[in-house]
Amino acid sequence: MISNGLKYSGGGICQNRIFILENTTFKVPPGVTQLIVSGCAAGGSGTDYQVPGKAGQFIFKYILSVKPEESIDITVGNGNTIIKDIVLLANTFAGCFENDLLGYKTGINGNPSVSGGTPSRNIGGYGGAFGFGGGAAGYMSIDRAPGNGEAGNNLRSGRGSGTGTSGWGDNGGAGIGVFNALPCIEYDNAGTSGAYNGTYGDYVAGGGGGAGGYGAGGGAPGNYSSSKNKGTGGGGAPGIVIIEW
Image (cartoon, rainbow, N blue to C red; front, side, top):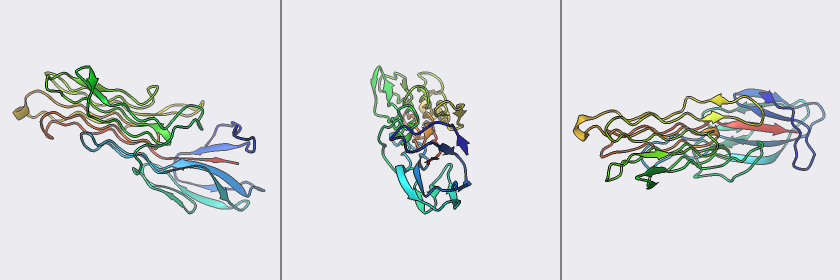
C-alpha cells in the first residue's frame, strides 16, 4: 500500500489517495463514509500469433459506501481484483478507454509489428485502464524481411522482438510499472524467442513485449512457417487499486 500525498484534482473533494499493489486489508479512516475507488484486474499474456493479451476489467471513480473504521479486504495482483464485494476479471477486454488519472495518459494499445518496412498482421497487447499494451513480435514476411513491434507508449511497455533473418529472434522487452513520482518497477514479463527447429531453417520468431503499467495485455509472439519456430507472447501487467477520500 503506497500513498503519494497528492490531492485529487477532479472537483477538489478528496485530499488523500493511495495505491494498492498487493493483497491487503484497508481500514476506512474515522469519519469517512464514502470512498472513490478506481482499479483493474491483471492483463493477459499474448498466447499465439495475432492473439495478444487482453486488458483486465476495470472500474473508474466508483463511489463505494463504507462505514467509518470498517475493514475492507482487497485482492490484487496477477489475476482477478476484488474490492469488498466488487470482482474485476483478468484478461477480459479488447482495450480500455484512455485516461490520465495517474498523471499521464494510459489505456494505450501496444503497436503492431512492422515487416519489410510496413505494418504486418501481428497485434500488440491491449491497453489496460492504467497501463500500456506490449509490442507485438515481428512476423517474417515472404521476402524474409525481419519485423519489430514497438511499445505502447513512452517505453513503459516492452518492445516486441524482431525475427532473425538468418539466426535467432530475440526475447521481447519487459514492461515497466510507473505512476506519478514513485519509483519504476520492472516486470519479469518479457516474451521469449522461439526454439530453433532445423526443419524450418535458421528463422526463429521473436517474443512479444511485456505489458507496462497496470491491467494491460502482453504483445503477441512472432511466427515463421510453423508453430515450432514461434516465440512466446509478452506477459500481462498486474492489477492495481486506487482509493481516494
